[in-house]
Length: 189
Image (cartoon, rainbow, N blue to C red):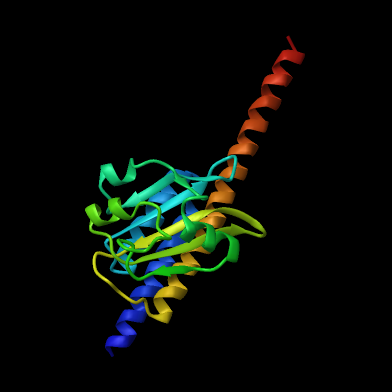
């Protein structure tokens, strides 16, 4: 009975994220809902979503839940200094860090210690063959994630990537529409 309750909880979280992704074009609201829901669904300490910068060398802050302002403001994550993010994006698979406080793959190990972060999941975000960023799940104690939890994190990662791409397409369409309207108004003046 308890396993069904846990599984129901995971399905409910996935449903919540999917509903939000499909009901809003406000990308920041969607990203915030994703990190909030992921933190709760996986009983994690925190969750963050970072997006690849224009030059694809840094991961920039997108949204976070459960992280201090100081930790969020530590700066961009340089891919050439963050083996775990580079590995997740290059191999297109989730990477698990049992203890970020001592793992050399984690760029900000000291900041992780100060923040109380121990285990970390890094889920790559892709749309087709295009990398968009990473979803990170943080725990406050050493923890191994179950197969259903890993599957949920990866499903949320896929939904996140779709939401980001949809938001970008909507913004581009909106800009093109306004440019066309402005052009049309100038033609009739």
